[in-house]
Length: 82
Image (cartoon, rainbow, N blue to C red; front, side):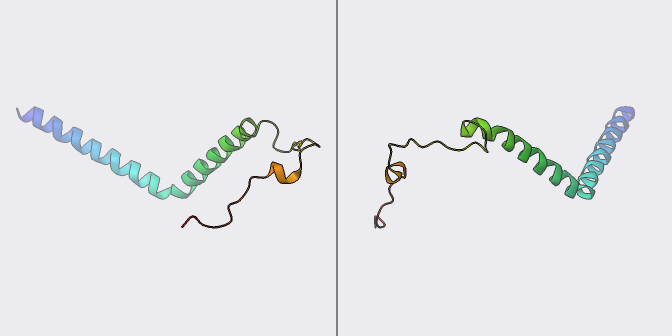
């Protein structure tokens, strides 16, 4: 019985040391971790932009010549509804 309790205590101690080490590593390197996540997110967004916009980001938008400019813009309401 003593052997089982010693084994559980040793495993619990090893778990606490591992958790403490992981937290310490993240605390010390938090700035570089945040920068890596930002760069990865920006790369994903930049990769999705051409698909969302329907073409190249630098490509000009073609507006048909027979459509007046006013008709191509959405109308803005004159006042607030309340």
